[in-house]
Length: 416
Ligand code: PMP
Ligand code: GLU
Image (cartoon, rainbow, N blue to C red; front, side):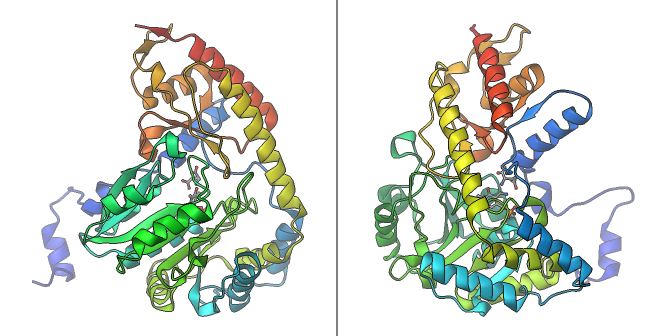
């Protein structure tokens, strides 16, 4: 019987027995969203929780962008757009690449989606065949390995260390490549470590890739403009790389537009077309109103964005200072994004006054959340069980309070 006939589907279901797609059933929920959700739930129940869990700017969307959204509704611009996104938006994205990155793309090389998360998922799904390997330097953003497994491919985690400020070395890359390697995912500036690759470091990685034509780079550059002491270099701008790179970017972080849901990919037409086909069957184009807002974002004066980055920098510097006074908590100085990723394993083997044992970063996270009302995200979800992620996309007042609480919480832990 044809597997897809309704007769087969109904006959294969046992009464009252739910049966799920094993790839979905095996998937881990997003730890960042889960911790943010837990913090929100506690807050709704009246607890004074400070959430440094989700990577979400605390700023409102800048006025010209919000206004463009309002006008789109008032103009009745509320119907489906072209599946890959409005031509005007894709043209504006091409202009952004040309002006900011010196990269030439045509609109058919751009696919706009419901957030950069969808763009990454589409890219990974299109590129990886069953059994292919996808290289993911750790610490990584939580969703990459889950997206990889869902696509039927195998995530190959390549650890990096604090000594290289969590940047992948050419040697580690060369050692990880096999005949099955199809994709390398890079994220610079990085979530969760804030590290940024220099041009020289990227060139060294590209040299390794030159001997492996099958590998495509998925370069997640969503924090491009949240950058402090470093210069952002798109890997697609390096010689020979534009033809084998899918650049991911979006509006959530740099324009404080997390709730609007708009991201995009740019890459070779063949790959983008496959991704657009998938999007056409799964979700269609992103929201029409959001796309109008996106066009306004790309053409607005950059002063409000620079003010946000200035505030993030001040917060980062403040947190680094506070961190330096905490025994056994080290983190390299982040050069971009809005996260700190300190190592906290010195606290394993300790006990809290409540009797709670701390043996992992999960334990420490739940201790800080439940007993000291600060929400962070455990490092295991990012592929580093000795780390913990602190998002500093929160007001200075909240950061001060949160750090007082973290300091008190850590001081109360004693060796067992
Ligand atoms: N990539 C990275 C590295 C991120 O931190 C995020 C945060 N959500 C995304 C992609 C997805 O962003 P969004 O879907 O909100 O555009
Ligand atoms: N990217 C943000 C984070 O890492 C938002 C949550 C998510 O989409 O995972 O916290």
